[in-house]
Amino acid sequence: MISRAALADAWYRRSAGERTALAVLAVLVAVAIIVFVVIVPLTGAVARTRADTLRIEALLAAARADHGIDAALARSAGAPVADATVAPATRVARALAGQGLVPLAPPRSSADGSVDVIVSAAPFGALVRTLDTLARHDDLHVERAVLARLADGHALRAELTLRAGAAR
Image 1 (cartoon, rainbow, N blue to C red):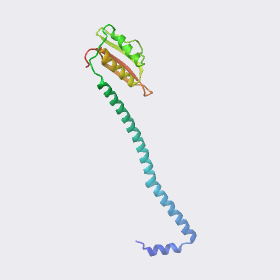
Image 2 (tube, helix red, strand yellow):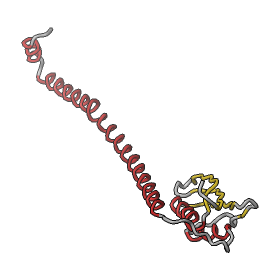
Image 3 (tube, rainbow, N blue to C red):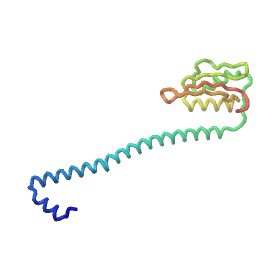
Image 4 (cartoon, helix red, strand yellow):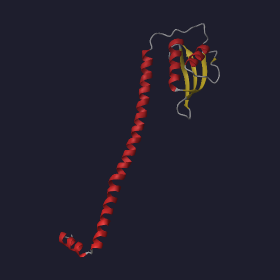
């Protein structure tokens, strides 16, 4: 191992220009070590934390929305009171229009009492409110649903089959 005295002697034997060049080189090496060992990993950690924060905020917003929908559905009380004088397909069309939803074609009643309807661009909240209204007021419950998120990410294509009677 080299002693301190030997290092000091080697340092002082160098010319002033060599000592300056070695000092500058040592500072550059120290700065490079600090940058690559400390700053770069911290920058990456900050970027990952920001991305995680955005993802968690989106999940929290979705959970809050789901909780709000669940609470609204839980507050709804009483048995449905369907207007028997109005055809089920007409009640479905009325409920869709009440939320500003437009089906691709008018709702179609089947011989078995079910109603089929396709909505091409329905915001999720409006679709849930429509189905809630149909279940609470018109005694029409979802028997089959095929949902597909549209490319814009804000709306769904919904293919629904509704049937009168107890919820399944």
